[in-house]
Amino acid sequence: MWNRKFGRNADHRKAMLRNLATSVIMYGKVETTEAKAKDMRSVVDELITLGKKGDLAARRQAAAFVRNVVADEKTGQTVLKKLFEEVAPKYADRKGGYTRVVKTGVRRGDAAPMAYIELV
Image (tube, rainbow, N blue to C red):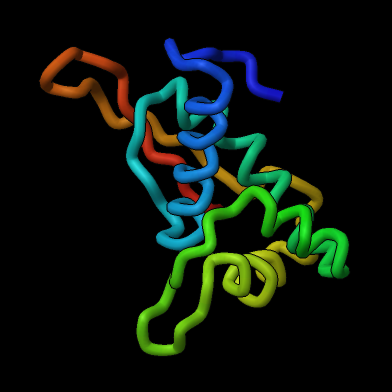
């Protein structure tokens, strides 16, 4: 699924992508390096596709990947619940391409190319 190693071992890479995917679903938009954003597209698109299926098996598969954090403090809504009840229904008539990567420039410290990954 992922073609870049990012100088990390497999467990660290998977944890990084889980954290970024959870943040994209929670906030709708995350700034990261361009390479990470490009790899995140397929991860987030898969999660939204699971959300569109909406059955118990899809919910369990998504729950196994997404971090169990509260997305909205007022309502106590988790990221998984937000994925299945808010994010996925928005894309019910869309066949794919739920995310967009927008290049923003370079990071000041190491000149790494930066980009936003956001839900369309």
